[in-house]
Image (cartoon, rainbow, N blue to C red; front, side, top):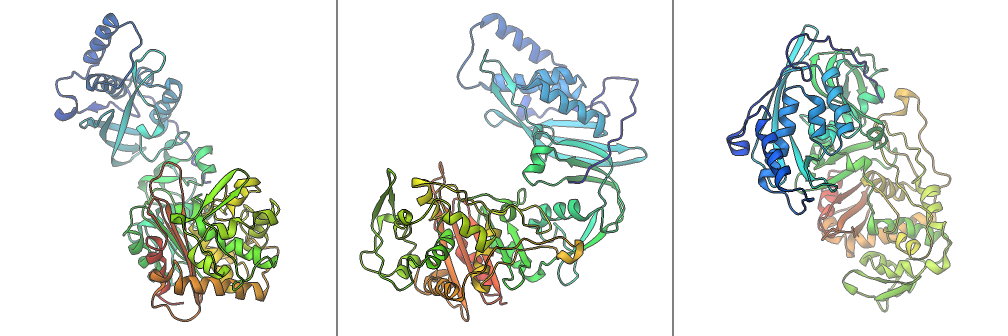
Length: 555
């Protein structure tokens, strides 16, 4: 990750100070009407409460308690009494470190806080300030919020502390720094040489941050002066990149060319916008080039970094293993019982369906779970893990696509958990990038690590799979995936498709979620794509239309 040089702020000698200057707290009539902002109203209420109630208070917070606790915190913060503001939170040490760091490093002045109407225990507020560094200055405006909670030990209402209270882009452990950026900006280009921007392609915000972190220092640019979120260790481990909030002076950007197709990227953005929580990736099976990545939510790149159970799309990998072991063939008779017991668990099919007399291909096409789980007694605990790693390049933590990504995980499991893994549940975790790669591997017959930036740019080594599936296994996989696309759960989404194509749907159950995550992965010619709609329901109805529309654009 790029490191940012911190520049110490010159100390002021007059008046109270907060993050570089005196803060004026503007009170919204709807939120805190009638309360003084010197801290007297909050303190008076607290004293009265202490005198009347010495027992520990429990139960939901009252509106007065929310108002008192939030006013106490905001008033102290606005007057530069940072220790007092920190003490008004439920984690005073963490709050003090953050507020003190902001005061010394962010170089904000003339800060104005405007509280809004409380929504239950949460109080929104807007922030306006000037980022001032040496002779440079620019305005900053954003919205944030705080939540009031009751401390368990004594029932006292306090602000629930997280760094996001200071700015919503901050995760705990991150910092705000204004100064010369340690990483020059980059100008990212699509495969045709056009500029990629978050304004034009909203899903690419996190991708552009990642490209800057990876290539900024080597792409030929020079650094500018910025207010920037500098990620801490936890955020870096989660794959988050540093984020520019205000650019005081422009650096000279270096140039990084990507593999993204402007037409496919634009179409992917449009497709995911039709669902609340959708993500999709499109790539080229013959090379691994990523042509598009899009997410409805632009704050976290689920498509590249998500870690979700893939549901029945994992049956592609399971079937590869079964075909290679000669445990089954597409047209072999193989019933799918309504229930199957394994290691004390009873597994059910979707809607408690069953296929009493049918072929394995029919069970694959109908996504009938127990036709796969009933192979568990014939398998060793590590078989699926080895198949995923050795043929599909998954779960090795060695993909180098050009920006942060999660490479999938298929842990060795036993008993019922091993059986659940065969249908993409248990401990199996994937994202659309991983599952698009699975479909691409079937189409091409061998694994090509996906990449967003050509390895020729920085001479990095792409991941390899230990072995290639046989031509017979590839033909069997294409047979069952084509059947699914024509007659199975993917038929509605894939209607009208022509040429060489195949698909697989998935629905992954998630604890505490009413509807499952809907998955869909497919290929057509030299295009492969996968998508997920979280809490959307069946993959054929939710993610299917997104993926199919992109494949129909042609190879």
